Image (cartoon, rainbow, N blue to C red; front, top):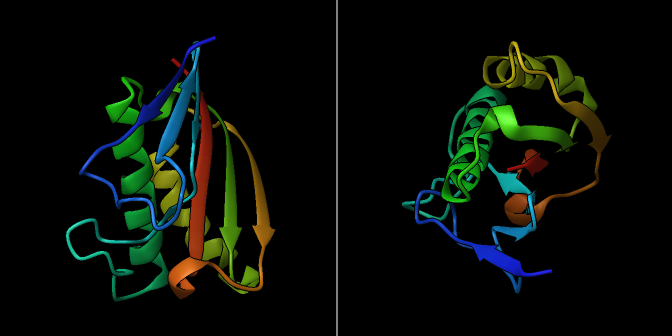
Length: 126
């Protein structure tokens, strides 16, 4: 099976030795997307909703670079720093996944890269 590395300038560059996503046949596996502004390389300032919206826009950009969209996503994993912010994150998540609702896991973590508050990864079928 051929593996294809996905890259787009519309999402933050990888901050380590990994790809933004890997395509394997008709499957796409994205790396976690933080609320990083791709132009600055920094976490967006503002509320948890702003950070979540940026993370999901980054995820959307990676999917589009692979020829997919949010409607192709079958599973997401959301990593959050503070489970007390689950409701606020969920509101924004619902803006992106409103009619199409992929399977999802949500995990509270001690720390995320760049001291982010939310990170989202996805598996999609292309």
